[in-house]
Length: 127
Image (tube, rainbow, N blue to C red; front, side, top):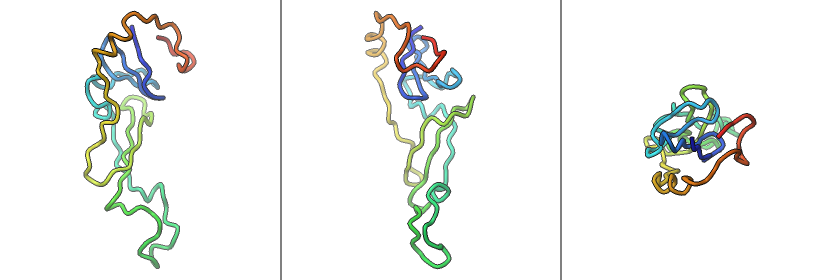
């Protein structure tokens, strides 16, 4: 079974051609799709993170992001709740497609590589 580490919280199982959560090993979605489609999304008001520096009752501009212009999308594993990604986007903007691989080329590259231990694997994580 070939598993390729992609981020701190994501990997691709090349045999199943699927994204996996590294926190709980859950299969998320096909590796040929945007991994974010397999995650839970929390559309967050940016003022929860970046609280106003000035009193909003007294000032129109408080140095906090305006939620009509900016939202924070947080993406969580639907199985274990691990925060996988977060991004700042204008309201209504679709999630970005930030990671896309040529799966066939990736499989060909890893076909003859023997993976016994990955230098960035978490303790106890097997490949």
